[in-house]
Image 1: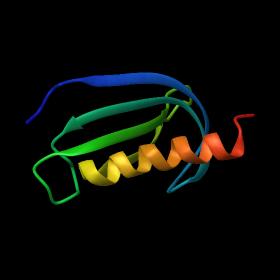
Image 2: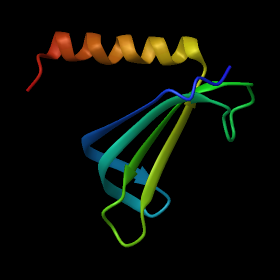
Image 3: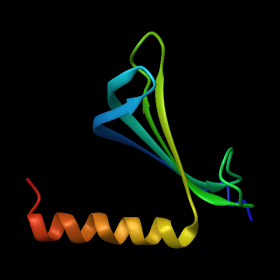
Image 4: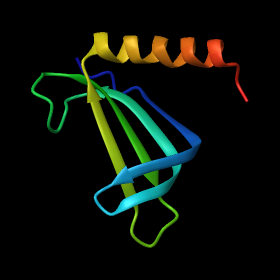
Length: 84
């Protein structure tokens, strides 16, 4: 089911697209119909750089279980490594 709940946040980092590496400025997270992943719904994350003349984007579509496992892996890694 589409919730239309969207989280948008400022981020700092880099992403790699067809043209190579680019700076990231925004991430958008939402649960909706995927564009490519073969499922009715997925957790979608768009990493964007809207500051360049031609905006750059890296998109990720995950099944809910994978999305939860990724979230926990990120938190566990940050906890173990100690946030800088």
